[in-house]
Every structure is written in C-alpha cells, then in structure tokens.
Length: 69
Image 1 (cartoon, rainbow, N blue to C red):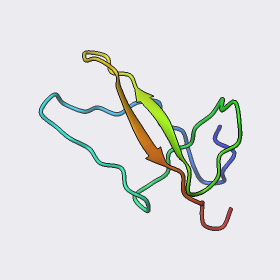
Image 2: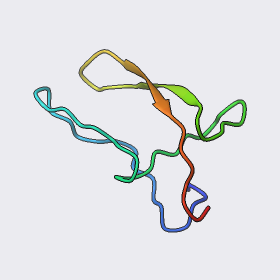
Image 3: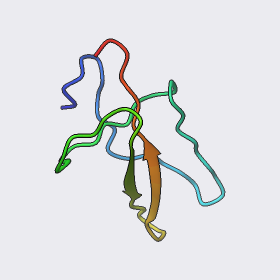
Image 4: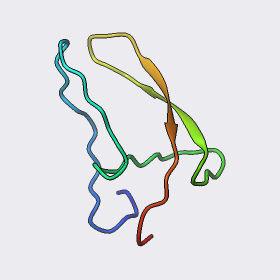
C-alpha cells in the first residue's frame, strides 16, 4: 500500500543486462517507505537498487512534490 490513491506498488522491474532505464519526473513515481526522517522537495536522497544477478547500484535521487497531494 502506497498511501497515494490510484498508485499501486511495483516490487520489481525486469531489466536485461544490455538495457538501461531512466526514471524522470512526470514519467511515474517512486515512493520510499521506512524513511527515518522527513524529506522535502529540493532535497536529494540516496537510494540503493538491488539486483538479482548484479551488484547493487546507489544513486542520488531528487525529491519532487506530488501534484495534488
């Protein structure tokens, strides 16, 4: 449960070894759960993606407002 009406969780993506994906503002939402402190638009958060057959990848992700929230 995401807490945002109409938004369903997606526990995984299928990404082939030769593929690249890019998540951009407006293309969808990433909801982080279990945060230890609040975040605000304009901040960045460090997110680590775990893969079944590759090393983890850690990236900095900008926090943006959800329109209508």
